[in-house]
Length: 530
Image (tube, rainbow, N blue to C red; front, side, top):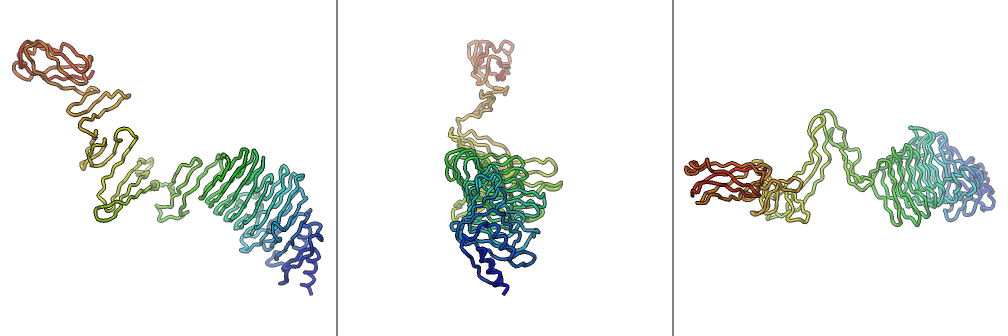
């Protein structure tokens, strides 16, 4: 008898509820004058399970007016309409249309209700209207909802706001926030114990952002460990798609954010100083011109194993791209007095033919630290062959000549710097007629070549043999008029006449020696360049 009376009462209100195993019944929508009051009355008539009202309230096809806030304070209630295309709710209130909040807050009920299957329409004349204001709830499902028309100066389509608990493990699918002043707002009013918007799944969130409007306005809290799949369209000027301000931290989420914009200036992502945005995935502009304003830290990680340590001195690194598209990586573990931690390495492997089979050789580079405090930091390039007798070398090709090689032992025609097995440093000029210059302001003051070395006060050596004349010209590459020169007799006749032998002239690359008219005298000449 009781079950029958309950179903009849719900039916007279225009709704049905699954109470005591009965199927829902409903009268036409015209019989409902205030949807909010009707749904609240239906909730009051649901049974209580585990201290909370429990059951499913259905909204039949039709158009409805709502002038009373709908209060859903239980994690065990579902309110499901016939579909966003079949149920239209016009909310005339200048306050919260739907208030969804578990009272008292229950952190992990393991079960949750479902809200959806309707369109919620606000009024532009209401400056402070909010379509769906929810918080302090977990394990809920929002599906097949369109919220639009909340276009007053401070109006919000959907507002997640923690006061006494957190919002976690919520599933959002086919939710469309269309052209509201702020489509989606996040706030944390309860302090550090209520700042979590983590472990949620936004699997199909859609938005349209108009002139002067915001898509997502995240004003505080942690959004972490979540899947965030959203499509944002927009048109008009002065609009922002995603904004992070205050103590806002988006950590380790999986993103698939697709955006496009028609004419008008658009900020795609704006993060204030002190905020953090990281995770892995894609932020893709499909079409339109947009800018980013990144004031906080930003990183999109390559896939990695988060939080795994293989030992006390190893941990999973994080490769990421920063806001400018630079690829970076951090060592995971903090340094200690006994351990400094090198950066992760980049290994480049190639397949080589060793004469009989395919083998591998590998180059890797890494920032390698020495021990102790304030250690040396070495950018190390290391080569390891696995089955190929390859010669490791680094080449810089700039389109000028043959480029330059850094090699270990292999000589060759290309200019290169190498070392041998005894760690001697060898510089190859790249050919028998090539010259090695030690440069200073591009004037090449020191020259090392085939059979001679000149420049920078390196002694310039020559020898001469006299003829019957009284002067002999000697070519000496690198000599100038400022050179300092000396003569040394190298046979007896030269020694006999050394007193009358002298350098009488110095010009570029040549000296003149004046001597007695005796043939066959030999002298060694030593000059400095200046």
